[in-house]
Length: 289
Image 1 (cartoon, helix red, strand yellow):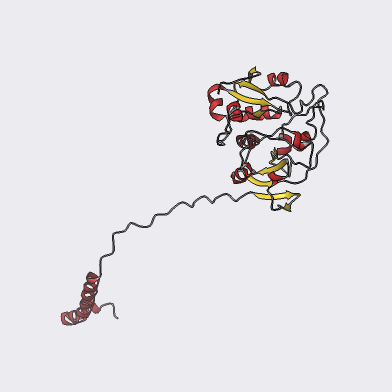
Image 2: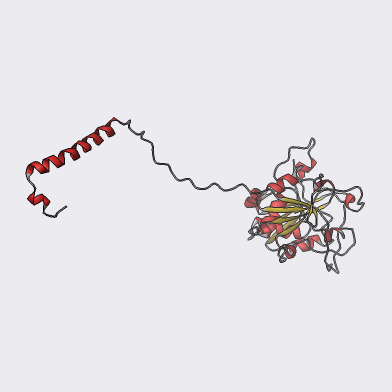
C-alpha cells in the first residue's frame, strides 16, 4: 500500500473500506456482551509451604542391625539416642529428663556398685565426639532377668510407660539404638565411690542462681541425681503420667527437687555445693502431699 493512499483516495473509497471493519468490531462487542459475567472471585493467594512432619526415629538393635520385634525397652537397660545436629547437649538432657529418664552411660553403669571408684555421669564428652556426635546414653529402665547386676538397680519411677514412643516422636531425635556398646577406659575418683543401690530414697532440694534450667539439670545429672516428685512416686493408686520436667517451678524458685541415686558418690553433698550457681542444699527434703 502506498504511503499517500489516505491523501489520494476519495471519501467514498474510505467509507467503503471502513464499513466491513466497523461491522466486525460491532459483532465482537455484541458477542462479548452476551457472555455470562465471570464470578467475582478473588485471585488465588499464595500459601506458605507447610513444614513437613518430622520423620520417625530410626531404631536399631545394635551396631546398625535391624530392630527385632521386641522394643528395646523390653530387654536392654540402656539405649543410645542420636539427636539432630542442631540440638545442643543441654536441650538433649532436658528432653530426656522430661520423660522421667536419666542420662546414664553403661560404662559408668558397669561400676554402679557400692565402693567402686566414682566417675562423673556428664556425657558432654560423648555428645561432642566426632564424627559420632550428638549421641546420648540413656537408662532404658529395663531390668533384664538374665543380667543379675542390672536387675538389682532401682527403677526410674518417673519414666513414662510409653517413654520409647515419646522419645522417638520428638523432632530432635534421629536414631535410637538398643544394641551393644564399647566402653573406653575411664578413670575414676581416688577419693569418692559410687553409693550403689540404696534401700531407701533420699530426696534433696538444690537451689541455684544465675544459671538456666537447662544448665542446672545438666549440672545435677552429671553428679548422678535424677529429678524427683515425692508425691507422684508415693501416691496410691498411681496417678496418670505427666511430663516430669520442673521448668515452671525452677523459674519461680530456682530450685530442683531431686533424688539421690546409686550413681551419686559418697561425697555427693560436697560435690553439690561446688556446682555452678549453687545457693543451698536441703537434704533430706520432705514435702507434704
